[in-house]
Length: 139
Image 1 (tube, rainbow, N blue to C red):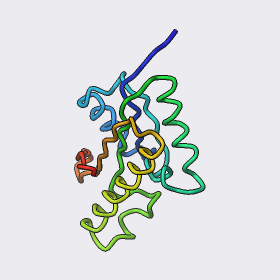
Image 2: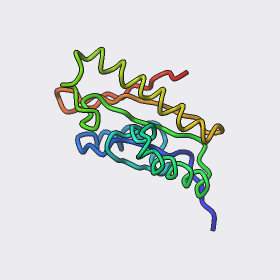
Image 3: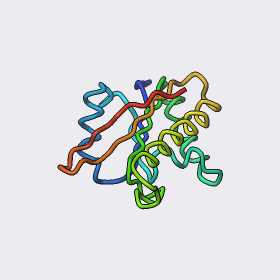
Image 4: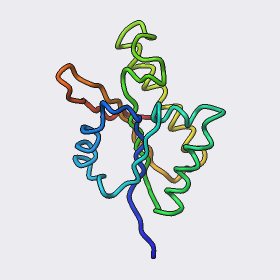
């Protein structure tokens, strides 16, 4: 019995984003229509020489088994896998870094799966506990 879904969503395992993640997926029409995976650093392992086999294999399995057409990667500000916000001189530097990470992640995924469309996002926890998720334009 075959079954398909639209996409795979890769997010950070950080619990602070849990409730907002599902609201975001609902808003995007992906909840119930995507494989959802989470691990430390979201897309970071896709570019890490020692770790990249695992996430790229998971994407391949999602493609093979569920016929996905899209990959959605949600990076976030203050990610512990990157050392948190403290390792950056300021928010602008951290945002620029996360955008450059999304570019590298896209390049790594598209090199293996050129027919998949990649969407990249940056999530940021707000002081009131809400999460702002912004889609980034990726070249």
